[in-house]
Each structure stands twice: as structure tokens, then as C-alpha cells.
Length: 210
Image 1 (tube, rainbow, N blue to C red):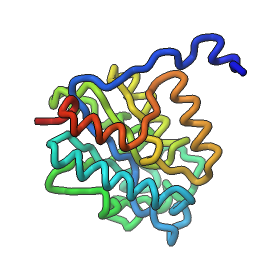
Image 2 (image 1 turned 120 degrees about the horizontal axis):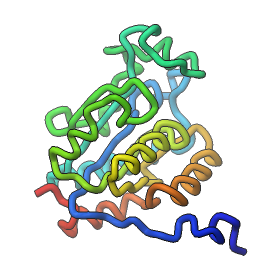
Image 3 (image 1 turned 120 degrees about the vertical axis):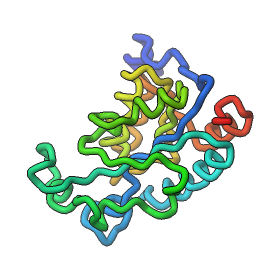
């Protein structure tokens, strides 16, 4: 049965990959990844990181740009008004919470940067980095889907990039918000794809960096 959004034409256009792809990895840092931390872990986390690591291996091999970000603050006063106490309180520069998971970062290859808001684009040089490298398509991975992934996908769309949200490379604290976000973002701003589709695009050389 057709739902009201489909009837009104939401999601009827497929964006598709463009000429030059980049991978954006959002907040796969220990504070969100490691279950030893209050905000860490989740039922999808290990699978998402493992799949992202596979995707990044192919991307780097084909010289596709990779941007890798984490959220951190010099002090609690520097943080925005989060409704999550642990982010402003514990996510300090050079803290364990801010450290990127070693499985998804290559400091010799990736563009690694700090962010202060939900979106990877908000008050960061990310859009300029993509423009410099001729990127027109951004495949987004990371956590959490209903929070910083959604915000980054919306901003990617608003900056004019073709936006792919990689569902099996994204994680949330619970399955339902993850699925709700995929559905909602997929209706409006981005194509919802799997890692295998991004890898196939890279290996076809259509999205490769070289």
C-alpha cells in the first residue's frame, strides 16, 4: 500500500553517483564506539565499523579522498548546549573519548579534523576540502545515524553534493531510530546505499580519485 509520502512524490528521484566520490567517516571515536564508555557501543556498532574498514581499504587503494572527523572540545564551556551531558563533559581534545578507532583511520592518508557541532560540515573546512579535490559525491559512514549522520547528510545535500548514506556502515544506539532516519533522509536528501554499491562504484573507476 502506498504511503502518503510516496503518493506526494517523496523519494521518487534517485540521485546517483557523480564523477568524483569521497568517503566521509563521522565520529567513529572511542567515546561512541567503545562500550566501556557511557555513550559507547550499540548493537550495530561492530558490524558498521568492520564494513566501513573494508570500504575504506578499497577507497584508499583507488586514491579516493577520505575525510575522518571526531567531536571534541577544549572545555565544557566551548561546547554547544548538548542535551547529552557526557559529550560536553568528557569529550576533550586528546582524551580517550575523542580518539578515533584505529580500524577506520589512516593518519598518513585521511583528512582528519575536529568538529564541534552535529554536522561534519558545520564551521569546519570540510566543504572546502571536497571542492579542492573536485568531489561531487559524498558517501557518509559513521555514528550515530539519527544524530550526527543525519545532520551531516542534510548539510552535504545543502552544499550541493550528491549524497549517499551508507546504511551498513552506519550505527545507532537502537535499530528503530536507525531505520527511521534511513527512511526519512532517503525520502528527501540522499540515496540510501550499501557498502557493496560504493565499492562497486570505486572499482569501476567512475568514482575513483586517480
